[in-house]
Image (cartoon, rainbow, N blue to C red; front, top):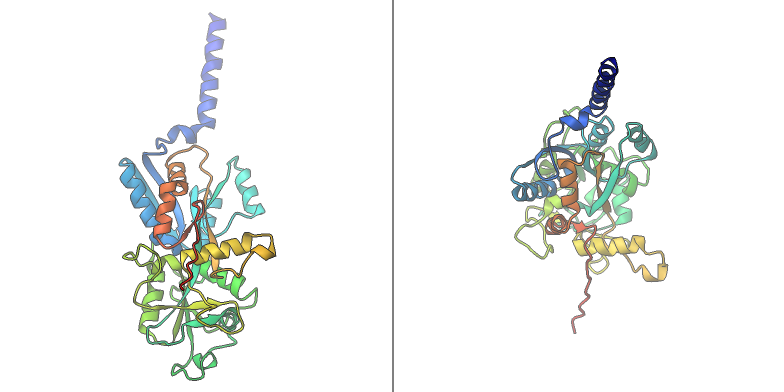
Amino acid sequence: MKKYGLLALIIAAGVLLFSCKDKNRVKRTDTTTQGIGEVAVDECFAPILEEEINVFESLNREASVIPTYTSEARIYDLLLKDSIRLIVGTRDLNDNERQIIAERKQRVRKYRVAIDAIALITNKSNPDTLLTLEMLKSIATGKVTNWKSINPASKLDSIRVIFDSPNSSTIRFVKDSICDGAPIGKNLRAIAPESETPDIMRVTSNLEVIKYVAANPSALGFIGVNWLNNPSDSTNLSFINDINVISLSREAEATPKNSCKPFPYQMALELAYRENKDPAQRGTGGYPLTRSIFAIITDYYGGLPTGFFNFVASDRGQRIILKSGLLPANRPMRLVQINAK
């Protein structure tokens, strides 16, 4: 009897120990197609993620994906603190961030879901719709502060440069990819104040950029191109009518022939330009202000966050991205050049 009693005690202790070690998994009731899951999203991509969530939930009636739209800095902070296990942002994790997650015995999965572009927008009354990259850098660093420096015949005065928020991926892109590490100009202003609560569900600042530019003739706005998508144009060759979208050129002087706008096919040309190792095959590139969008997940359990992660990477999820005016990361795009005779 004592032997059996001791055996029962050992078994009970083992079950208790296993349940304590695996308590997080036991508490989870969601699956890849049902339950509740959370995702933290760089608010630059709120419109496209809203569409992804709506379609995913319509296909999986028992699923509810709760998004938190916030700054880029905040979404990576949430992931590192294990407050959330699925994020959508514009950069991969660095080695230190991966080490922090590895110490929790979590596995990181990363997927490049789309190619995005930073669009430059101006008021409809502004006739200047062409800029060179060099001129744009001068504006972003504060060396050029007046529209007359761009066009002596301009009737506009000081350039009012507007972006969404101080901690956004947009301003990081401006610093890293446009200013090349030089300080940004004092004439750049964020719509959202730095003290704004970082983790509330908000998408207002990007909309405010559009509204401000539409109301101020001398404004120049920086904004993610998916906010400008024209839903009535299935060809993705136009934008909303409230503002002008600037064409950019790599040349010393911008002309209509050597400048381009952030259309998906121009993003594809730029991607090929950057990734082609053979200079002879690279061509001249496309729209230069492009960046990748990544979905990053640490949900080892494989619940609803994993299901949504897989959906965004799927063919259907990628078609939603193409419809939004961005370039899907894993759908082949065929570029056809038509020469009019």
